[in-house]
Length: 199
Image 1 (cartoon, rainbow, N blue to C red):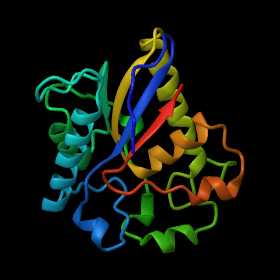
Image 2 (image 1 turned 30 degrees about the horizontal axis):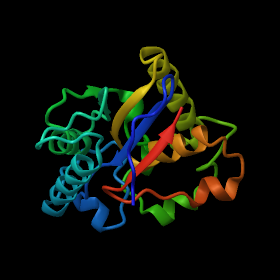
Image 3 (image 1 turned 60 degrees about the vertical axis):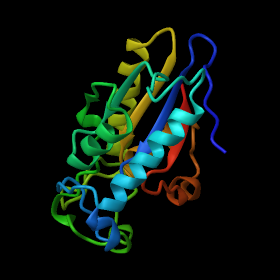
Image 4 (image 1 turned 90 degrees about the vertical axis):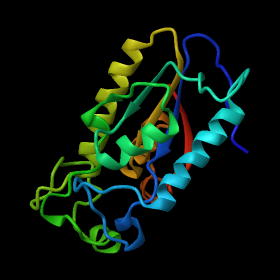
């Protein structure tokens, strides 16, 4: 069971939610930067996330979500919709560095087709010849985001992030200092799942 609690001073806790289900998620096609709305099930998933956070937040009173210092989100439609459902009390800060992976010419490939592409998980180059971002590119923009976030909240706190599985994977690698390729590549973050990372 997920547990949320206020951390000691100076620690930043990132509560990361992957957006709700979209039509493309049902087909196995990876939409990348293409816009997609939530399905009805996706909206229900986000309502459940909200309920989980309301239940678990410290000193919960009524139906107001007050756990977080701020809410950050990808500016993509599926994340905007998810943030509006999960945390309507907050005005999200939309950051392009939290957007989904840019797939370039590989847009609308299936996930299996993408994993077969040379350099898909490269840590040597930032982009493939197709224009698609590599893992290195994602790690670089997430590191930049985290550096700015740490500067904005020097005394620590609780931050809610509504984003994509690729960004969550990068957060997992960076915050846990993962260097093993198998661990990097086996990471998954299903729709609506909550993950916790600490800085």
